[in-house]
Amino acid sequence: MEYLEEAEMSMLKAIENLEERLITVRAGRANASMLNGIMVDYYGTPTAINALANITVPEARQLFIKPFDRGALKDIERAINEANIGITPTNNGEIVILTVPQLTEDTRRSYVKQVHEMGENAKVALRNARQDANNSIKKDEELTEDQQKSMTEEVQELINKYNKIVDEKIKEKETELMSV
Image (cartoon, rainbow, N blue to C red; front, top):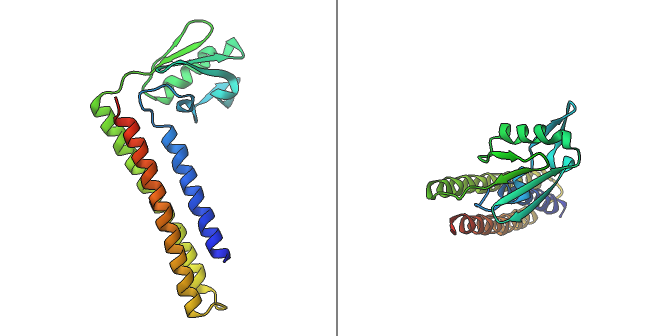
């Protein structure tokens, strides 16, 4: 039974990873998670933006980044420029303002392709988890052939369930991206 639990844990991690990656794909709306992964060189130490500032979304297409220390304004602005997220920051002396541009049809389609790639990567991770579980089941000499067959079928049911979840999440994100 432990093989199934390990496989399911690996599959859950793949789904969580997919969700985290999907959040970073912008859909024409401002979202504080767009800045995840952007590190600011703050007094020589790479620091996440959300650790240096309050991030607010005053409007659907704007992000305000208000640093706790005004001295970090230029560093935050530079880090956003270097991250190349497709948005140019504006600094008014107190806050950094990001205005998310309206997405064009071509941009939406390229994001949809990117989302489908992420989904495919998640499915590869699911298949790897299935392969690991099946290999472990086959190597276990205490299991009878019938037990091994039964367990590999259960692993297959698990991967089918998680593949459906991946497909649903990709479909949701595609719908979000293509809605104007």
